[in-house]
Picture 1 (cartoon, rainbow, N blue to C red):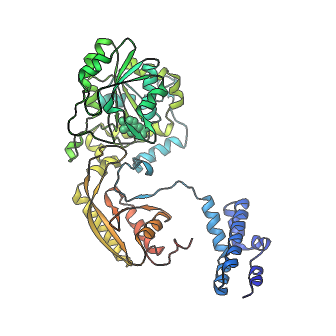
Picture 2 (picture 1 turned 60 degrees about the vertical axis):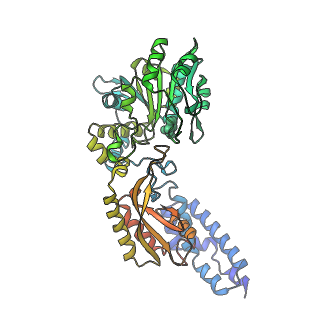
Length: 475
Ligand SMILES: *Cc1c(COP(=O)(O)O)cnc(C)c1O
């Protein structure tokens, strides 16, 4: 075959630029990116012809040049961060953005963020206000605390608390609570960063009242309790509860700080989960300062919420670090909306996506799984499709042992391998992230949103995802 002729059949750049299709692309995108896409795709085509010994295939590839340029330039302009479908069954998936926010709440936030707002403006008095003012009273009402604020995330909250209350002094922590949360958040390291000195007491499995009592010195600035969010020590164990620490702290006029991690505001045992101490419990038992995440079991935006005695919260508000760790208007607005739902537990469970997923009865999940399986079956795909019982988990380092009975749609591809199917699902326009168990791809319906069902079925069908050759695989 005549390779030179094939090379010559590749349209020249100026010819391409004159074509209607490319002119349309320049109009829609930009001249620079279209030029870049032309360069990339003509190079690719040359390389293809170079190693190809099938003239027919080489010609077909040349025919596709304009289409490939279009795909490449479109990809350059497509935001890299986009929605994905979470079929993993892990409700608080840190890699997938933790807690989804409801559409109703986001609509209200959009109205605020697309214009100006009273983020730091006191409308009553016509002067500067505080960004925490929008949710401080709410937090106090819900938790029983005297004062509240929020920073970027809970890691920042722990740092700010220690820096404000214990810098240059000692903080006593049980050896059983020196946790690593993931993403390199380790209590001893955070402590060092904040300028406080860690004093470890007790052992990995047992810490007693006397251990704390005996460790207090002139230098002690606080007693710290940390929720061992992502692991459990079981068996021969003992810990000292917050209310037992309070008398020691009182005697020495120092605060008891509790890092609760997840920050549960409602009693989840009512919904069949293991009882998890609530934020209200912690305040009631006398903790002076409590912090927790906004985007774990609370179901809100990423934030580190700090509540407690006013004298301590005031100190934190004045700390220079607060300026560096402060939340933005999106977070402030979303946090207020989500917290408002907690004024009624019923509303919270209904309107906060994370709580709705956790509490959704198995019968309802099963019903939805049948619906999704039905849609996939109707598409006549080359795969075995059926519903299959599975277990969802909370994730995000919350309730690590908890498993929630759930229902999945199981898909066994007939023409391609499971890893290949998984990879293609990840490359869909709206990527689908499944869970793979025993050579079957599972879509746990508990973490799917109803509106995603049709989208999943249509994408799999229209892009021939389960066929040997697929539009997804070819690129
Ligand atoms: C998750 C967690 C953190 C970190 O919270 P982020 O909001 O992810 O920064 C800190 N402490 C505990 C106990 C946690 O569980």
